[in-house]
Image 1 (cartoon, one colour):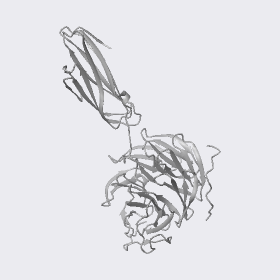
Image 2 (spheres, helix red, strand yellow):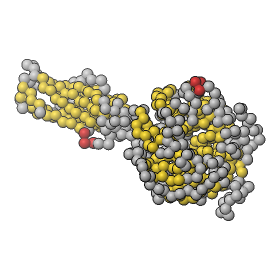
Image 3 (tube, helix red, strand yellow):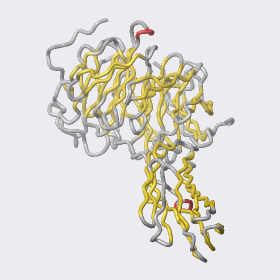
Image 4 (tube, helix red, strand yellow):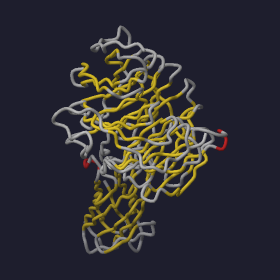
Length: 484
């Protein structure tokens, strides 16, 4: 087994079956420093963040204190054949490990170090796994069997019961959820499949030719990043349009992928480099390359984004990088052939905005027995990504004694005002509402001023400058009405 020290950053010149053990598995203590808990009675996870690492051959889940980079325990997974992926509940209280060779997912209670992992029975061996942001749903993808019959099974983690089964047409390698949990992204041999988690249906499939391997979603949910092993690229997917846009060229064997908590930087591990490539998510420009030991695979960032942990599959340790200084901090040892890792972090709140702009027109209509002013209120959602779920506008009329009339949907009139509601306004779409103001026959010199203002909307409107509009008219009589 070849091993070499990791180099500092350099700038690129260019850009079958499962035999479930009935005996309780053991929590095996590792050799620990003097300050650690006794080996025969490991305590709860140390203060700070914990990395959970699964090895491909030993059937164990190793826990590591990321502050000291010291392992403090190993959790046996009895009956495991080929552990594959890890997913952690957002609060870190549960960790789930899939197994490609055994029909089970191992559920580990991280709050009870001595408690045995609980196997959740699955249809086949599995790889792809994801936990919903609220921790109430576990998604597991088939990895064995007929690809045409492949499914994603949804489990209730509390009861370990399957609650839904979603046909997806291909076996799944990896999975990630959008920050709001509304969409599930599956890496499959043919590309990236998008599942609507509300309806549990496939809504899109994006072809990716380069043997896609893993996926990560940006904290704001607007982009998904997919590594392609054969071509050595990171495909950037626009989650709103569900299209593949830019491609970031890294190195052949592209595998692990991670995105910084602020969404500004991406990291891709390439097994055939062997390297970790950093790139700016906005421009796709490669900003640096770190040489690592053999076969860097899975990547995970600490919650603050300060450290990037790299699983080196062909070696018995992990490499830890300082993302601020782009240097190697050191290694976490005593992990045999690490294949995946997870560092739990609560997802950041998804702050979506929809900027709504309002326009008001006034058209005078003369009449022998009295005229009127017809108004059209038009609301436009100027956002390119977010649907405005609701918006309420109030038109205030001066003089206030006049009562407008309206038959528009979602509108109600009262003396001196009209209130209208618009719902489900897609990005770039507009909606109009009409109302009228009667003008009396004897209205000599009467001025009418109508101001429409947004009084509520969801999600947030970031720009108040286009939230109101005013039109003024003067009536010399019912037959003569002038509007500016």
